[in-house]
Image (cartoon, rainbow, N blue to C red; front, side):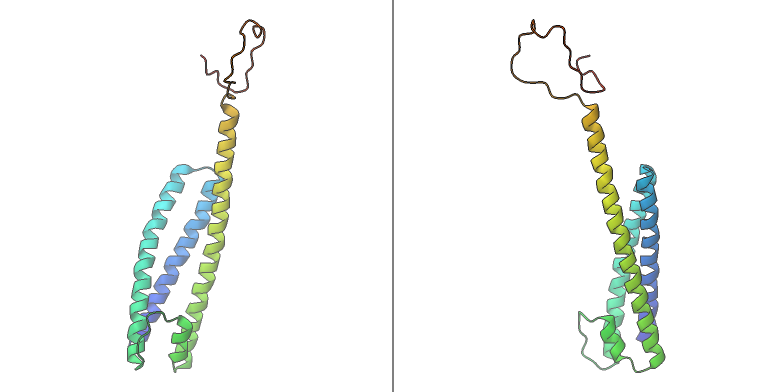
Length: 165
């Protein structure tokens, strides 16, 4: 029966989202501790999991379509799990579907929060790097002409590096 396959596909999708959530939490620590090599490896893992998620979602949609056909309903392309849940007659199956739907909603909400935090951390990190570079770089010199004889005793140095050396 397509219902069992649909449940299995949804469970697999949940496991993939949970793994993505774990990687997001690891990514947060890596950004905070400035471990760039690990961060790049984690990002590559996330990309692979996202590809798997796309395939799993495609399979879920296929099983949902098959389930609708099995129930004698004309398949809708954009059907939700709540709508599928209303089509199920068995109380046990309806509870199973409701449970996996809730688990998917919870994990995607957690994933959304972790991603928002990671985006903020990355923005702050980029701002800090830009600020640090501005401090290290020498202040731009004036473009207008000054008589060098009048400015002999003074040497203005604003940065860490002497660009004239």
